[in-house]
View (cartoon, rainbow, N blue to C red):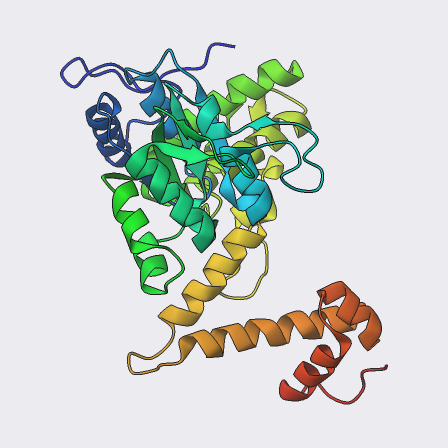
Length: 355
């Protein structure tokens, strides 16, 4: 299927490959992408989960002088520190248990092209030191090796957290932040570009019609209004998911309100502040944001207050799930039984828990 391109503007350059939307917010993104694409600078993409950071990263690569080279994507949040280190830099045979042969890392595989480091905010301090070296010196060693490898790889990184906050909290190296933040590009959430929803829905309808051999080509006015009124915490990814669902469930050729989930129609009942959460990451973000924003201007010790509340709720729910049997709950939580017993007492969860 040929996917539509972004808006063409001969005065500012070529279209942006694979991106849908003509809202003012997206026009700012297009302008930033065109400016940065043909440079050699590192790029930092910022935005909520589901805003299309990988698509923008691919567009930067495709519009750059490196377009003929490889584009390599790595989700830094999906792997443990040791696995991610091997994934990024490679390893040699025998460097750790299971290393039965040499392996080329993603940085090396991306030589002459671009590497997209998604969720870079989740990397550990140890890996951040190695990433800083690659950015500064363009060199590294494979895990377990002493031979230095030099690469010509452009780094495009993305974060769904404010890296300024991560630096202040000492979870992210400040020097690495400034090396990545040469050209920041902020992607707007879907709720800030609602005028793009009709074209996005149309695009996804075409795509999933082809995928499922369906013919849903009309959108009921009430359905479109509901979609434009919805908050979209999961952004374009959530919209895509709901459009696919509608195509699969539709009996006729129209996307109607009865094909939309209760959340979009305002019928879903959830606790205030978490009403629209669609995944664990978004839910956590909304919970913390609510805790911080509702605190008084003079209130401090927010870390302890918020974390303690979350810890108490996790323990309480897992204990309920495990019929208040501590040994089962400790295993489910992945903590020592004595630790669990202590925390139950600290949080005043009662004496009804069994041993």
